[in-house]
Image (cartoon, rainbow, N blue to C red; front, side, top):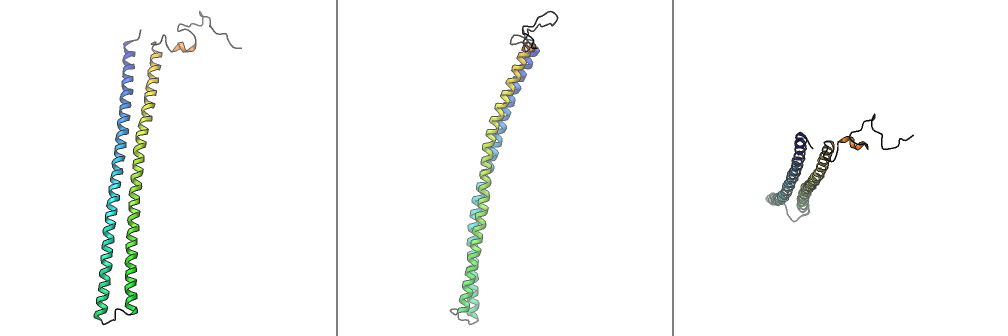
Length: 186
């Protein structure tokens, strides 16, 4: 029969394994949710970057039109023929610079949005990995706990004898009085 302390130790070991499994599951869920939250924040930042980029484009176009207007007004006030070659070249150049500014804003916005979306994807992947890791660790803990319980049960005699039964001899083996059941190898 098993000793009460052995039974208590085995029950506590089983309870510890269950508690550890629950902790691993909770940790995996929490890490996954944190990564999902971070991914959502990155997507919101990508949308914000798009909106800011559009605002910058509108602002740059407005400033460029204002500059063209100022150039025309100043030249007209000084009596310059606005349809002649020099003012037209200057207006064309100002418009080209404005378009370059607008294109730079678009490119920078697209890079920023891409960065946020890439980070969101990485957080999504980390969320999935956290769940998978929790499952693997849960299985590993269950197997380890089960192995420990089996070893404890075998060692304490729950399965018909102590650990010495694993040697191939009965548990009351005394080399002086017992003849081995196996032939020696020589």
